[in-house]
Image (cartoon, rainbow, N blue to C red):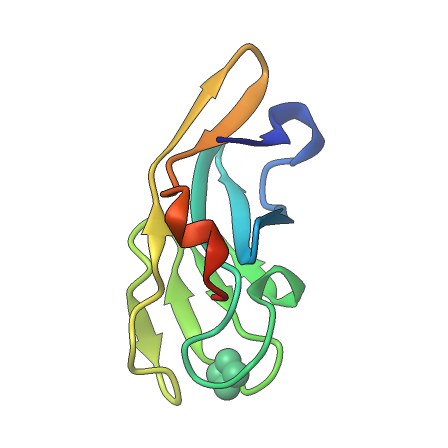
Amino acid sequence: MKLAIAEEIEDGDVQRCEAGATCVAIFNVGGRFYATSDICTHAYAHLSDGYIDGETVECPLHQGLFHIPTGRAMSPPVTENLRTYATRVEGGAVYVEIDEEETDKPG
Ligand code: FES
C-alpha cells in the first residue's frame, strides 16, 4: 500500500506511517527506502524517534541498535529482530508490502 511520498523523506531520515493499527517506519538510507516495524522489539518505543547512523537506527529509549535493511538486532538490550517489509517507489510514492489483515493487528 502507498504509505509515503518519497521526496518528503530525505536521505538519512525516517517517517512514521500508520497502516491501520500497524505502525511502520520508512527509512531513506542513501536513496534506498526500507520499511520496518516502528515499534522496538525490546519495550515500547518508536524507532522513528531514534537516531539514524548510516544503515543503523538506535532506539531512543534504551539505545538498542537495529540494522535497517534487514531488521537485525545488533546490540543489547535488543535481541529480537525487527519486522521488515518490502518497499518499492513508483510515481514518487513509497509503497510498502503489508498484508491487509496485518493492518488490523497492533505492532
Ligand atoms: S525499548 Fe528499544 S531498546 Fe528498550
